[in-house]
Image (tube, rainbow, N blue to C red):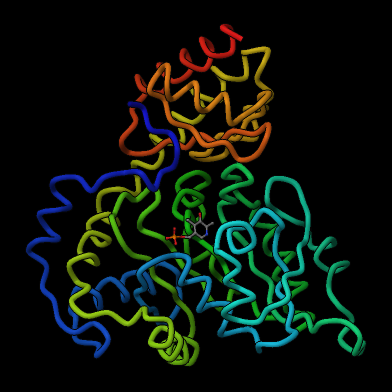
Length: 342
Ligand SMILES: *Cc1c(COP(=O)(O)O)cnc(C)c1O
């Protein structure tokens, strides 16, 4: 089996499991778990924020982040139509924050400052929702793992600041962007009110994400963490895996990026595949084929290769720790065989 379905499919490696088993623990929600506290300090420093909070998932980081910034009942969040909160969180932003979702379109899951400015609702107009939050995804998961150029992101933040909007960085794969272009995480997070990273994507830990921000916002976030059932007990067991991942699984993301590039270049040579390898910035390859669901099914049934259909004619393949270069070459050959067999 070659599993390119997602980088969430990684299994914790033996060394990670060992440090998890030995982790010092305490009552997390009382602030008494030393391993969780160490992880939060570490991520706060990494993201250049004064405070941070451990959460069970990235989805809860978005849920709490949005809830912190949005008043239920009419406040608008501006974000890309392909962003995770719109397509993959079960309607959470409206259910949990009462937010109006105002999509801002753009290439590769990114949008320009101009597009944001044009999408904002006029503050003085009582007929429209109140623009309140801008949420940005780095990297852009379902839009192909693209890395926002720093100046484009800064320009978006500048528009947000000028309109006194709050800002949230969905950094589920922020460290992929760090490794891909060499801009430190704190540089990416600068200017955002809240920012978070996930440990269950390319970092390969089984559970955990950390949300960072000002001490006031994180203090308020504890109320929502409690409310949503995210306040934990001996969570040091899983936080230890996250700490281990920060020490051992960040630099190696470069291998995933190299493998994604090999895959993209191999696929782009096939006439039945539509893909521009220059759009592959990190570990995610999104490409076009006819009848993606049937294609993915055959790839799995006939060759043991897993990829995900994103829609009727788009497929996503994600490289990660558990697939090596040989696996990527085999996956390319399998795609070729399926497409040639018609
Ligand atoms: C995976 C992901 C999330 C959600 O994280 P989970 O830990 O799976 O809940 C949110 N945003 C983006 C961009 C993601 O890729």
